Length: 245
View: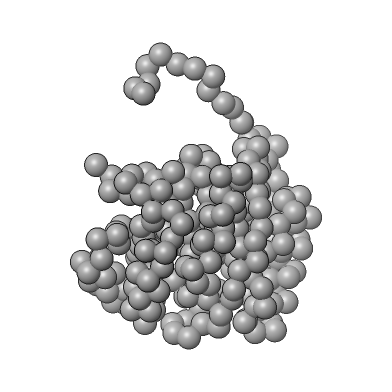
């Protein structure tokens, strides 16, 4: 049995070389779970880390019955780790947060308040604690993405999101997918809501983002999305006689 099926929410935490953040993640997530408005578990996805991240994740899972992990054979990037977590989850809802703790799991409750009415509820980083250069890069990338996708989303880079799992599993997989989650939910005629959440400076570890994957690569991915959007097939099954109830 998939153990995540006994929860309503699986919080996916992609991890790549974040050994210095695992202890803080364990503390914050373990404190949040009893207060979650939906019964929740944590699924760490080790994205081929070359430090001690996997070892520390395994130790945390031994200490907490609501913590689970899966480990990818090699580093595939954030989209691959997120997709692996979504594919593995069996709960009605999936959440997502980064391992850098620049957002806090407590704010999942803000998103969960609207999850029955929207297929994706996502955070908007209020009072961002990033450098001026990083903010400018993000603003340019977000503006170009909105122009290309018409998703109307203010801050697609905010890592705090909750989705209906059935919609998340239908998202087409490609490198850079994580930047287009709202647009890909909208392609399925899903509804998206944005909610302000808190943002904090990184206190441990090193950011994996730089000019190429924050600005240049997203520009290229927008054209790939436009190509896919024109060819996207959307369908709903009206009935069948072979699926077990």
